[in-house]
Amino acid sequence: MFESIVIDCSGRSPEEIEEAALASVAEHRLAYLRNFPIDVDQYTALLSRLGELCPNYAAGSTKDAYTLHEAINVVRCRAPRSEGPERVQEKAGALPMHSGRSFARRRPLFLAMLMTDPGWQDLAPGSNGESLIVRWGDVLAELRTRYPEQWAEDLRLLTSLAMSFPASHLDEEPSLLPFLYVPGTPRRTPVADDVAARLPQDVNRLRKAAESLHDGRRWFEAITRFQHTANDPAITTTYVMRAGDLVVLDNDRYGHGRQHVVAARTGADGTQAVNPRAIWSVNIQ
Image (cartoon, rainbow, N blue to C red; front, side, top):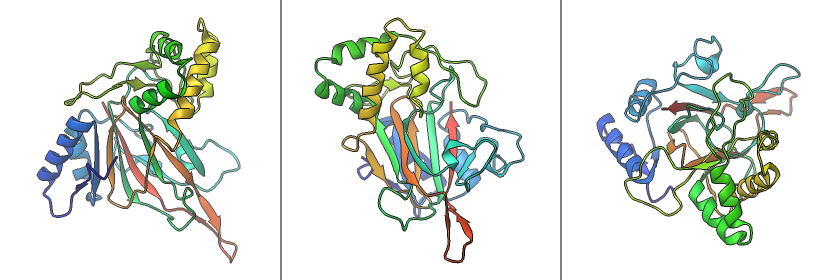
């Protein structure tokens, strides 16, 4: 997916980088840049061309993850804690395919992720926090092939039943859109199965939402098929982000996730080291 659209920023001016990135987003609803400067001002200037930068999840906090810039969430690894809350992105393990802020009425149009430190890359494949992306339309097309008997009813339920579920950590007005809906922005070049999806990381949050829906049990079966297909390596793209790699994606049309990451490990001398992996994540409305 990425090799055909990659933009190498080496030797380009900020204006040239912006022009190339915006053109890629307009054409593909996706941009992948390599060797982007790890610079707050240039990063936020580029993203501001796409829309309004959303305040980070704890704007005004004094914690390191939120003090770099009011719109940047610095996603780092943390050593396991015996008590207290942990951001799911900071913990060891994988993140299943999901869409950003799937619960919220006001959702980001775009997500941006700039790798500033790739962290440990010396583990077995699938254990280095490899990034994942999938186009929801590709999931839909695959479902049509895999489940011909359930397909028509799955599509009817996923596009017609409005659903609401709360955030696990934020107090915001929830969306009442169906699970699948028409994307909020047009594409320059039309493609088949151009669809948006509201898929949370924890699909069990939708199991509870199903309790209040007519045909909720059958609806959740369709959700489960969609989620399993979205996480199938046969239709997802796996890529390794290096320092200076920047991905901008349409949050309606693409899901993202990661493979397993090791957050901390103990050396031969018994001391614990934390994976230095760090991503500057920004939501854009």
